[in-house]
Image 1: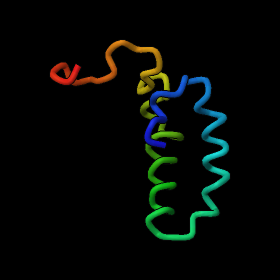
Image 2: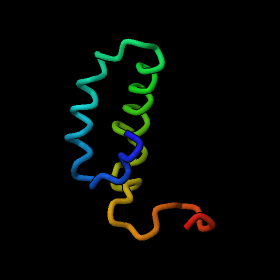
Image 3: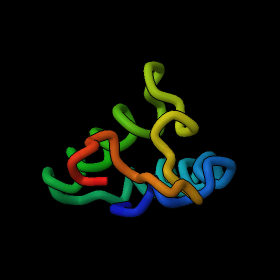
Length: 68
């Protein structure tokens, strides 16, 4: 999950289907919150499509010039 933005954008949808199918298996509250947050803010977000935040094969992988 930590490296989702490093996946090619065309592989995020298949990953999302697998991720969402695992959501019912989350037994603890923190894990349920993690699944919900990730699904709402990264996988099904209507504001930022994966092509916008994906950094696969990009030379600069930050939006902060000081880091890059």
